[in-house]
Image (cartoon, rainbow, N blue to C red; front, side, top):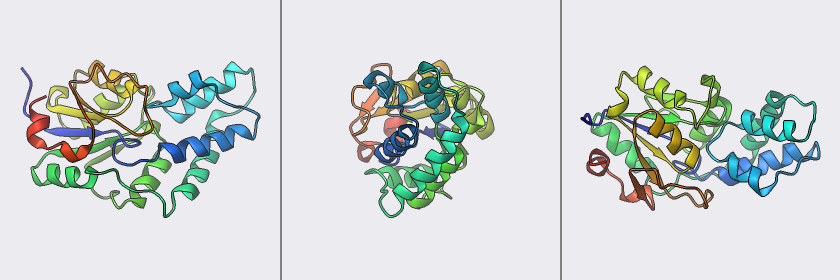
Length: 218
């Protein structure tokens, strides 16, 4: 039996903010310093996954001896500069978070991005202090599509996985949420076209159409 909704776990990039283009620009610049140009297949695998895993995969595929963690640090610095004064929350994001908090539903960010980048993103759009929990890609041994991030978030919030709804825009995140036995609402992002959202329990075009009643019905 599905429990009453206790927590909503939001992905960040492409769900709350339109930051994918800035992430892509920062990654392209950093990798380009070492002559790495990601193939279309590599770019498709990036969405929803940790930067360190994406960089490690690109480095190993080319037989290079580079430190992926060092590249992530450079990407974080580049990203922070790119978003300053340019990043906006996606339509309906702030309103939905406010609506859920007023309804005594816990809200969390569960992102594959490093904490430094998550905090910079949320601060830029005025959402840094609005969540009960912020869980970044740094917090887990395994990232999405492994269920570890969502299971850890549920445990820290004191919620059963069946009392949680995940809002995602990428296939890796949907797979992680379903593996965690959570309900999933997929939202179509302008930058993650081509992602398979079919395993989600429902698909929304925008967060503007989402409310507590809809999430409870999933």
